[in-house]
Length: 196
Image (cartoon, rainbow, N blue to C red; front, side, top):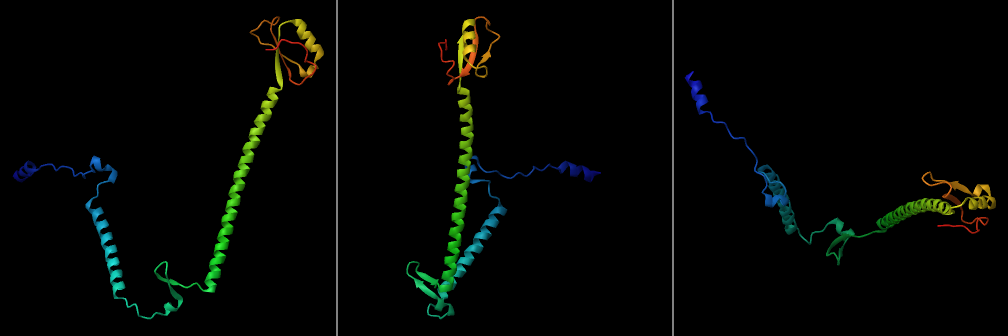
């Protein structure tokens, strides 16, 4: 029992381990790099550096006078300053054919794109024309405000029945306020009237 008490007496709770975060002024650099991240980055850099050194060593030890069979197909390019493969007629024809097909495909794609753009423009214009047609139909009517019953009788005698429509508002006195709508181009209703 004495051993148990000493164990519990010496027990100190450990602080929970927390990773150190990135400083506020260095937040733009991303999260703080940990050791494992550094090791990955360092090993990657080291392997690439070794490969570059190996290639540089190989280039230094290369004999420029040594003969390779590939030299028959190569020539020194003055612009690039290095050896490039000569284009023989077969590869040149293949390249020309490939370029021609590529240009044709680009042209077809361009024509299709323009076609869809124009079709959308036409649809937009058609929808606008439809709205214009509605607006024209609305503007064909003219409102006449008539104050006397005599004017109503005269207008109803002169105009055909289908061209004259009476609209009466419930808030007004029927004997004094009548509202008429008639077509603008109707010649029968061109007589004197009080319009507002």
